[in-house]
Image 1 (cartoon, rainbow, N blue to C red):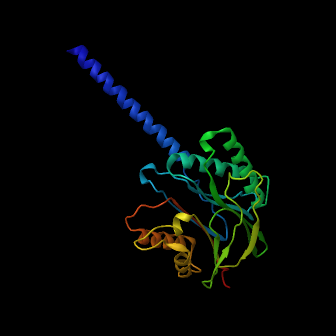
Image 2: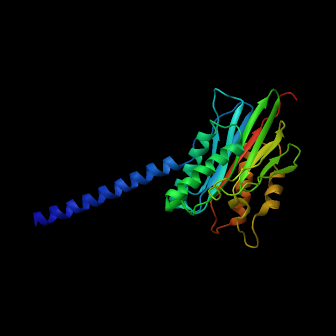
Image 3: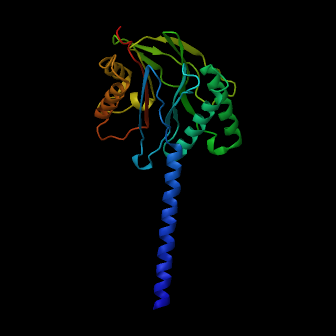
Length: 273
């Protein structure tokens, strides 16, 4: 009896340890794949929002990154993208893209060049690893620069929805990105578009999980997104993110949805102006 009891207890302990180890590994993986901390940049407000398709997995294929080197306070790199698929596998690939962009942005100032080099890395990895051979990604990469009181933003897109520039007076301007998806063509080029951000203007980067959120009768859509943004013109970045996230959530109801990512950058008004 004692021998049988001891064996049963041992089996139970082994199972408990195995489950605990699996949970620990899963937790470390999730934390390593989660977006990094958003930096604080004088004169700018940055807010983000991520909603994964499978809540139980906590990670997904939509991603963002905000890179700011305190030694170069007038330079800021933005990234927002969408990897095909969902869950941990998509998040691992998203992390590869984020790491590639982080590295190449230290070498190239041009967002188009950053995406081009990142694309070469992804194509090379796809050739060497069947796991990633059919996993494409869309992305938009931007770089903000200051020159005195002027703030300019240069953007390059890779098959991604157009960035939106919300002016302080409520006008919404699309900034197109004409490049192909990442990991598709080895020699792809990614044209750039430049715009000026005035005090009170807001830059909005998002994934297609926003515009393709399916409601009872239709998709959320570009027109509804721009109308939502117009109602929060000139407001803080957090208010813009909350307004879009709430509008999309109301449209979805309890329906299934794709991964969603949103990055909002607001230029603070000049005090006393």
